[in-house]
Image 1 (tube, rainbow, N blue to C red):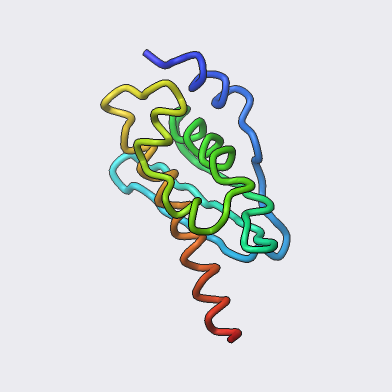
Image 2: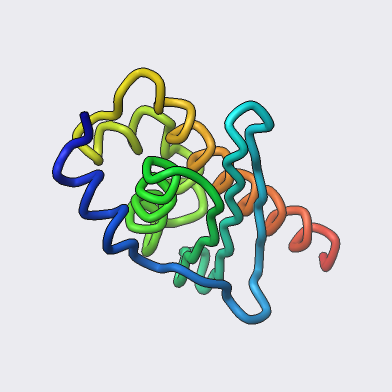
Length: 125
């Protein structure tokens, strides 16, 4: 049912936790399945220096959260904004159709964190 990569990111998730004093935070959830994801970003020189997550949800939700941090870390803000829901699922070797909404949440949480960062940055200027 799940690819080897999904199982690896579920059983050995990368970048779990919070960032102290994050530059941006994005939280999204799906009331139907109960998944809830929060992504934290730290930005330095217009790049995502650090990306961490906390997720309450199924194995696919944890795996997609882990993968989104791997995909985003080290990228510029613009590059990270271009990461799609499909990119997350593809990077994990695919997800069962019933679990595709999990990749949607991961990308949405990252985009929400970036939006939060840009809003805070604009308020300072």
